[in-house]
Image (tube, rainbow, N blue to C red; front, side):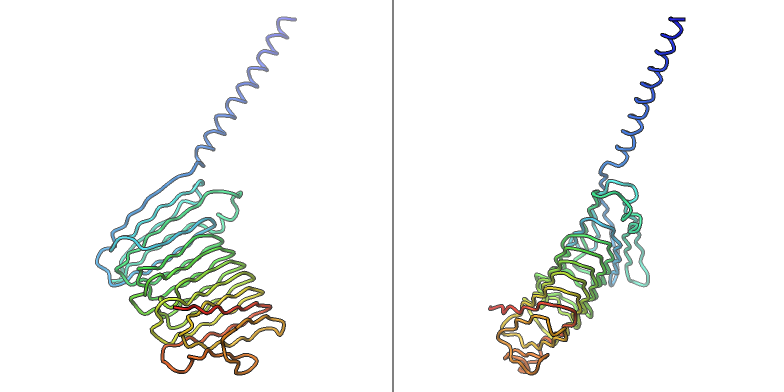
Length: 294
């Protein structure tokens, strides 16, 4: 009886050890499956007159800049198969259509933190219509050297810089940005060569830097929740600011002439066809105007 009990105990121990080893192997297999995966995509765009780019990005880091002529380049890093990007490209009537996407809803359900990084390069020689949809992200959208005809960004909470370091060589009809509670800096806006910008934001901090070469009359509409708004405007640019906010809002608009409780103009306003018209609406906002000298 003693030997039978001893053999039974040994079998139980062996079974437990086998179970533990099997579990460890299964865990390692799953862990390896979710290790960071990297993909690089290079797509020749062919002979097209313009390019429409739609980006649907989940949560993580998104960087975008100019790249080689006639090519799209993408570097994608992710650690879960749910985050694998879906990439489609086709040409319709001389217009290239590039779709980059991942499932935003499934992305949000993943345990945080996880790695999800996109580094995208768009062609510098083709007029672009750029549409970006994101849950939440941080990164730089550097539009320098790109020919932007339309720009649309919709995101949840984000921390991003949108950059125009050189003049846009085509007319940019509309800039439309909608974001949740965020920190957003738009740099070199005068270089964007835009007709109208509509910005809607939640509570946050928003900087609009109008440095660069303004070449036309441009309209700016800003609508936010409780926010800090900084306007950086060259001193020689004719500008009108209309602020339609709660009475408790704070306005620091030095160097402007007060027309009424809502309207302020710079000394250069009305002297040129190249001007800025800025209208601000929102809740408890803190507006600060900083004069940029050449």
